[in-house]
Image 1 (cartoon, rainbow, N blue to C red):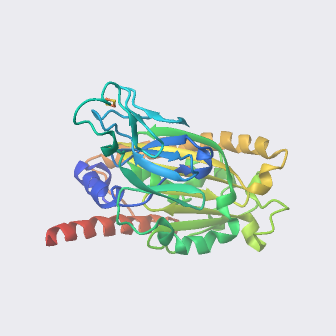
Image 2: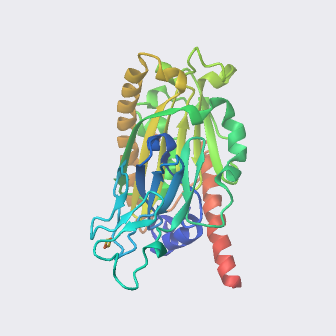
Image 3: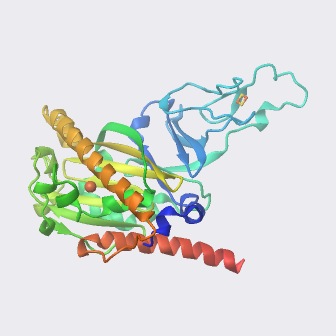
Length: 359
Ligand code: FES
Ligand SMILES: [Fe+2]
């Protein structure tokens, strides 16, 4: 894509209006919100969001902005019986109803029942919490039909998250997304870590679909958790050694292996920073394996080193794309997913512009 796509505030504005205010976006694993009152918070296209497990056991997403003088309500992740605004103490139920407001209950004209935190659409797909700000979006499962068929035997909804972190890197969100989509850089950028084990001939990059792209790597894993556990009867033949790298548009990136998974979910913070939700864990057969958590700890250490290399890589690209003489060259066959991603971005942006021009 041309350099301006990564650096222009006007283009980011277009992405926000055509993509981030409309698409389903992943906020983490539903298992992180197991008990009533468990909540997470997020910023989705500038809208602060709470997702909470209600007393009835449902997941509910709503605005994280107080209905009094509009303070933020909750921060981070945690467990709460009620939601108390940190500014003047207005208190909300987990359903978003206003339960109390100090000194206001007998005030003429004050009607507690007329206040309720606006609800935001929230659905679970394969164990992931997805939200959208678009009240008219199709159900999240609809955009995943082709993907469900591709990855069904992994049964990823049963994978168990063992770590979760959030980070902010100094790059445009698409540069990080594109970095995840191609394994062409593994032998070079990651020469100190996974590079020597990565053979470009093990990789396959089929054409992308409208809502996601993917590529495969089939090889003997360096850690036992990268291959299927002997008790895993779901995956057959080469699938027992196949890692799938998925990019679900716009910004949910998953590495799915027979024994573990990890993911990033991105949110732009201006053109020059990206907020990253980073989590991962184990397939169910490995959860009960006494050594699995040791393997996972080793893997996490490796992922941290690999991510540090990727961070250097994508922050360097972001400095590069700002140069007056910056210009992109030809993509390799192993960057097929990047081509599909560029087409997705172009399609969304141009459809939005055409719609507005015809109004
Ligand atoms: S802003 Fe929340 S109680 Fe005043
Ligand atoms: Fe990388």
